[in-house]
Length: 82
Image (cartoon, rainbow, N blue to C red; front, side, top):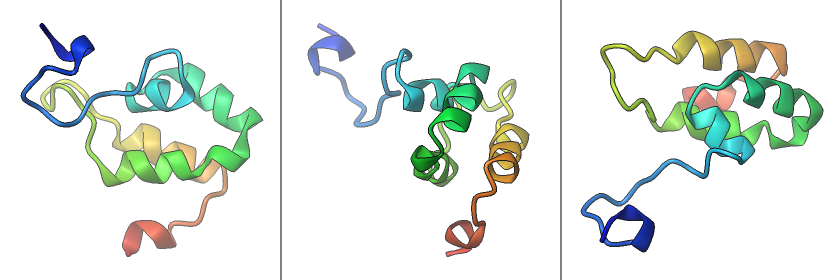
């Protein structure tokens, strides 16, 4: 039994790593390339900024990564404020 079977104590998981959202949640560079080709999926950046998906807060810093995505994709920062 494990998270693959849906039998786990926590209610949130990373999206599959082969998806754009999964790559974005993990801070992978391939997500940047994917989002540049799929700008209509920019809402996923907002989803990642709204939920801290780091697995280890001591070694993983995604603030710069996500801020750079917001800037490069020319996404509005107003949703972050609200």
